[in-house]
Amino acid sequence: ELDAAGPPPTVGAVQAALADAPATSVAPEPSGSFAALVGVFPVSGLGVSGPGTLSIGRGLLITALLAGHHLRTPTLVTTRATLTSLLGGDAQALDRRLPRLTTVETIHDATRLVESAPSPRIVLLLKEECDGYDVRHLADMTATAGGRVVVLGGWPAGPTWQAAPTGHLHDPLRPEEPGPRLCVLDQVAATDLLAVIVHPDPAPPPGPPLPHVVPPKTRLPRQATRGEPRSRPDASTRRLRLRVLGEPTLLVDGEPLTIRRSAALQILVFLATSHPTGANTSQLADAIWPGVPRRSLTGRLYTTLSELRTVIRDASGLHVIEHTDDRYRLNPAHLNVDLWQLQAAIHHAASAVTDTTAAWQAVVDAYPADLAAGRIWPWLDPIREATRRHAIDACAALADAEPDPPRRLALLQAGLRIDPYNADLHARAHTALTTRGDREAATKLHAHYLCLLSEAGLDDDAPNHLPSRASNATGGSR
Image 1 (cartoon, rainbow, N blue to C red):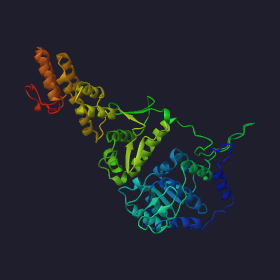
Image 2 (image 1 turned 90 degrees about the vertical axis):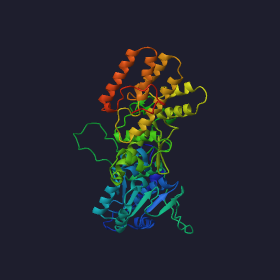
Image 3 (image 1 turned 120 degrees about the vertical axis):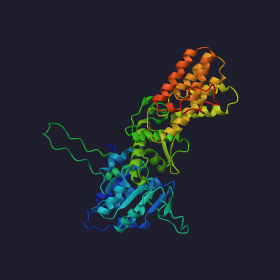
């Protein structure tokens, strides 16, 4: 917040410029500076891609708001997800108080706004929000009203220019022509400048005067300046662990982090199972909301992702979910996931040529419970079953190598606790009990197995006599 030390030099310069500005014009047409800004971009809209994309996006945000300072209508429309990507955690505090800015939830809302109230605007979006949506319709309506659509991250439906960190834009289809140069800003500088033009929150209704009390000055939110560091968690000391075997939980220094949205928790688990390749927006949308048209999910998906990334960043100071090459991935440098440890143990056991018993035991030890136990997410079952079968294989391999009959039986029973319906494990346990002469226990085990099948509606498939042996632990699972 602004304090007694005064604003940074950039802020002071903008304040002086705004103080000298003439009164707002009543003319509806764009001012010269805003028209010049609009003229930089193609009428059909523009995608911006490259290392300078977000910095140019922040510069465009500031430029559009200041260029429209003399206009009576909002000059910039963007989504909440886009604003959060550009400004980080300060977006929520600022977007309600920025003149000339309209923040919407989805691209559909932006389209309805442009259709219902045509006026010159820059519409600023993220590429991911445009997947599966006809942005050309929005671009045409915006251009007709004297504005432009700019998509950060590239745009398959229209021209995409390369963005350099210096702010230079380059059209790859016209390499011989120099491109325009736009303002570039980091988050700190952008929020400093936005703090100047925000509207203060409405004052509360006046109450009875209190003697000798001076009302506090309005404080404007902005990112910390370089001389006034924001109080954030020390990321270097944070330990994040995602537990997906059993009840899905994200732990920060051993303490569970509350994740409000069920869809956000699903995304975390889905990305954990998709490591290291990650998932694109289409894969996430199809998994979390199957059967729902993608174009109606764009805003919901990005709102969920944005909120999830913000919650984790605010709690830990770490960027756990990366977004590169149009794919979302969990960052293994910042996050420890129990499923990844299990997968590493499975890989080691499958390739081990010595001390295989210890390798398979590590698999069993790394499997405390089913993947996302108790959850009925539509995409989960095949992955859960594949993970479960690896644990069953480990129990069977250990039982095969165990010379001690009681210990062998205990390992088979451990496998049955993972999959009570596994016919092969039941056959092996039945054989182990019969071999040691405990026919009564073997009969009870078989009766219990038939009861389980009956309760599950599988009794018609139940054999009258269990086989004495099967070729592997997973061959007769169902």
